[in-house]
Amino acid sequence: MTVEFEEEKMQKCDLTGKGKQYGNNVSFSQRHTKRVWKPNLQNKTVIVDGQKVSMKLSTQAIRTLKKKSLL
Image (cartoon, rainbow, N blue to C red; front, side, top):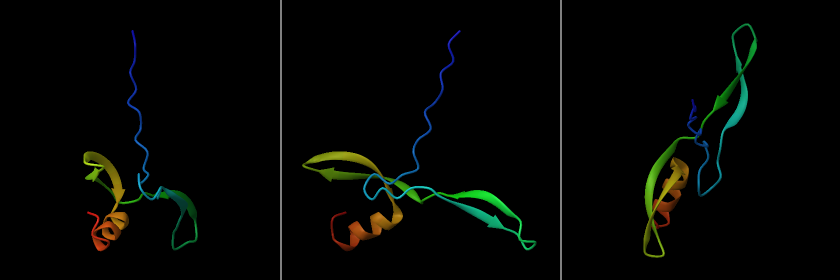
């Protein structure tokens, strides 16, 4: 019997490299518990050298590309 595991997709922007950040939740009683902040990633299709390429981009990168008229 073989068990196949799905590879966990990296939470990282393909363009800027922005990824997860680690820190603590701090309650009113000042207890610290570990937590993770994930970037807001969107799948976008970008034309690179005349070919469509699907990329995982952060919303900050998408805003910058729109501002520079590249998207």
